[in-house]
Image (tube, rainbow, N blue to C red; front, top):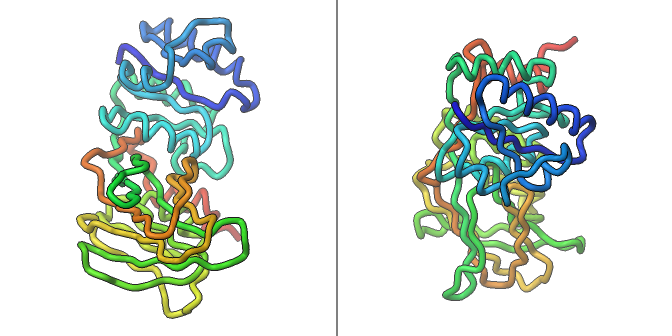
Length: 284
């Protein structure tokens, strides 16, 4: 571990102090901290031109932030598959499980090799308009096809492996990975999936027909979601961070990525421990 990429939200409290102390701590141990230009400027240093350059050079990433920052890091690290350590500076933090007060203790263990890698399934999403691909990206949590700002339903057609499954009329559809099962899908009534389950979840959002229920499919399935309604304003949202406006006839194609997100975990911390802590299970 010779170089560590540090990704953060510039607006979180005490960012300057944390970055200054962390950079000094790493250098004392012979590890080079890598920051992008905007982040480095906060502490009066020069940095890499962009975050993609950091992901290309780092041996692992440290994310100081919430799950949103972790999702961005997962997309950056997708092709190289470098490990990611998440430090929870945000809210709920299913992905960023290390507490800030345990940052340096956790980093000591990482540098000593005392950790395990938790590999998480990712999706590759591409949006097709006629014969053209207008957008594509990797996602760790989910892809959402949903209505616009007006209070009207959209209509979509869902196919698996080129076989028609159903037409859905409602507020939209969430296609999630097991990691994404504790995000938007959970709020829409979907089940929680252990990340080791190699499956995808299709969760309807406020379906007009109440018999439409969440559907679990193998991760080998190619999913096609076609917008069939004429209403304007429909969107495809990738990991809650990238939005693409849809037109009638557009097709959102989803496949499992050949790459995996590799999260740094410690042996004593199990997935169910995280669920109990984050969801307050067992509290009186």
